[in-house]
Structure formats: structure tokens, C-alpha cells
Amino acid sequence: MTYTDTASQLEEAADRIADVSRPDLQVLLRRAALRLRNATAVSLEEEVEDALRDLAGELGLTRNDTIRFIVREWMEKNTYLPVHSLDEDGDVEGSA
Image (cartoon, rainbow, N blue to C red):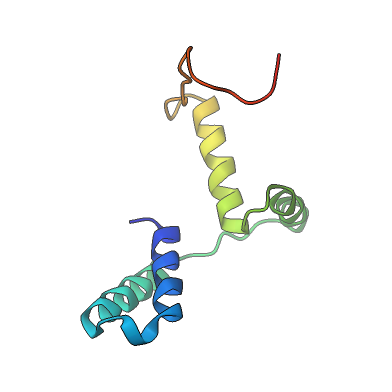
């Protein structure tokens, strides 16, 4: 389960709190507590933070999602992760 999945489930539970069963709510809260307990902030230099904030704004992502995006792109580019491949017959946006 990813962080965004847990966050979405928590938001949905908050929207319909009267309909959520006690055991389901306990699971969600324990999962959230575990993530918070294991979360560590990445401290960056001020100029990097400024650039990161600007990029996050351009991409419409949170700071953490932007960091995840950058790390994934770097790891794919440097062959630490496999590159997402496109089907030759698949649809793409734009034109060449």
C-alpha cells in the first residue's frame, strides 16, 4: 500500500466517518501512525528547496511527490531501474 493510497483512504473515512466501522478505522489509523513514525524529512540546501518548490508548483505535485518523481527519473536514466517502455502500436499524445 502506498502513502497516497493510505492518505486517500483516510480522507474518504473522514468524509463518511459515521459509515466507517470501528475495526476499519483502527486499521487506517494504525497504518497512518506507522507511516508517521517511520517518516523522515529530507533536509536540502536552501537553493535546492527553492528550486524544488518551484518545480513542485509547475508539476502540481507535493514536495514529497516531486522528490519521488525526480529520484525515479534519475534512477531510470542511470539504469538503476528499468525504463518504462511504450508499445509501438500504443497511443501517444502530441505530434512529431
